[in-house]
Length: 144
Image (cartoon, rainbow, N blue to C red; front, top):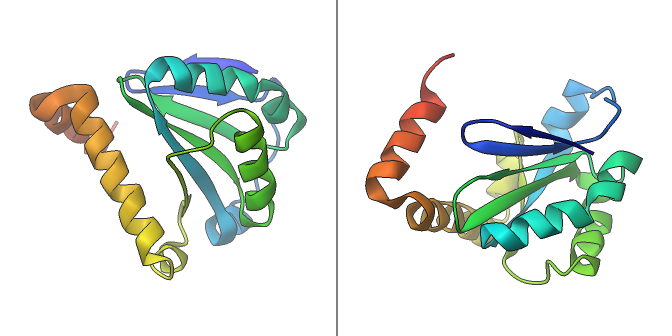
């Protein structure tokens, strides 16, 4: 597993790149979001190493604040398998599924969708404070 550190994100990627069908990903790609303290998130990410390298999990990323959130990427067809992997690796609580691009699918599960966004917002505020969260959002929406 390759680890790539950016200003905000820490990426956990397979050692060997795999092609991604963008059309399939836009229709059914998503992520399990797991929220916890950064130390536990990093330990979980390392437990996922063999699953990422084997292709069972597409990849993952977390933000570098504490508390943190880990995005564990997979296609919808593999969602339950990845959930089981996460539970095997002790991510038993505070996780929710969210689609990346198929927003229409997200709103068909409004409780999960609201929980996902509320958890992200609260975790970011706890991680960075109000001023830091505002700067984070500015940095994320700023064109490269």
